[in-house]
Length: 165
Image (cartoon, rainbow, N blue to C red; front, side, top):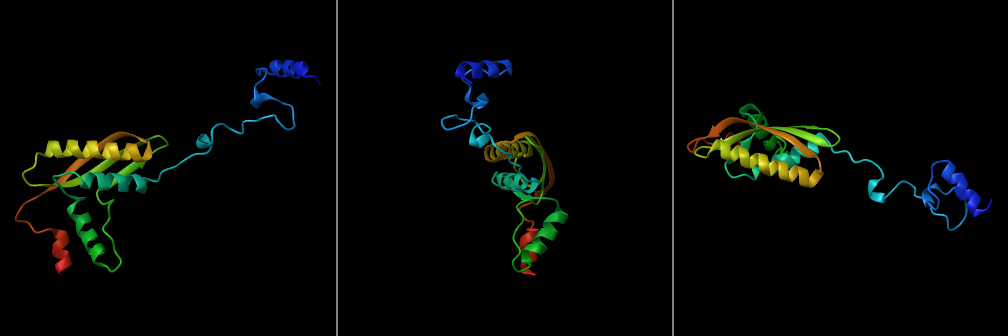
């Protein structure tokens, strides 16, 4: 079959003449595209826990955030931290729902007494969205923040109190 006849057959099947991906000829010098650029082959999935860790660390970086989670979860966390080999949980107070291209987050925080709660919540939301979107390329559709407590200056930390016992 000549080149002209091969091109005519390709055109009849909807391929453009000279398109190497549609070239049906075999042999050296004929390039076939196996599926696009290497970076686009395959799928990347990100676990909920990964997003929760990123969000937890980003929220804790905000001035005015004393702790994450409710009193009960902080108490259990402090007990778990005392166990040899136990580590502080960076996901405490964070819940993520991760889809293929979007994620939604729920955070429960404890703020320092005297800070403007609305300003802290706004800063947490901004820091969490920036960190999660930069690291995962997921679109953060919402960050819901529940302020569960205020840390008073004279209150001793539950976590440090449990470490002393």
